[in-house]
Length: 201
Image 1 (cartoon, rainbow, N blue to C red):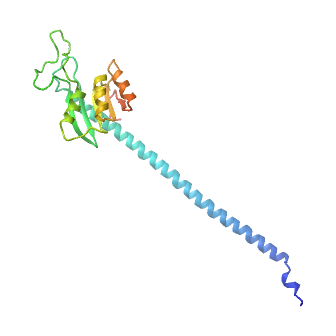
Image 2: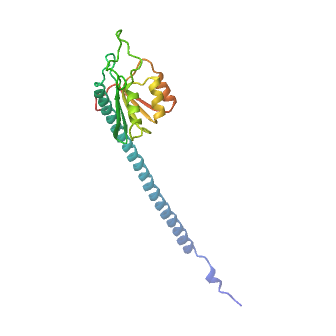
Image 3: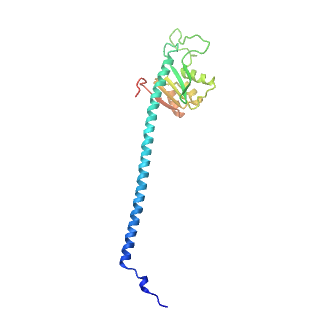
């Protein structure tokens, strides 16, 4: 049996076409891949930028709210009968004020916080303690809430804050003794000191 060997010859033109086709195919694949990856990169970059912008807006909004709530706590402190220092506190959860308090004597006691020598009576309750105990008597929960107080908490109030589940404390005036703040930091409670509460940044 004889075969026509002419049918199986590879001509130069055929090779040239085949090579050009392969080059064209590679270019198409490269172009498609480049376009896809470029669009993906741009999308991810835009997504990251958008996330960054949203985070910055959220931080700015929170900073505004922190100052407003601190101003409210300062106004609430005006209810205190204490002469030496008036302190106010409010507890906020999910954008709502669930409790408030100011330093003063226990319920049923005379509204006199200092003795004849000008010293604070030992049974005077701090603003934070009043706000936290008020929550305990209500149907609300302070778990995960934020405490706004005009002066940094003492170590005794820090204990109550930790046990009440409050996760964030924002204060205006830094008290000379910082053991309360140290204890809160140790317990993982976020502490934010804002000196200027009048500005709207």
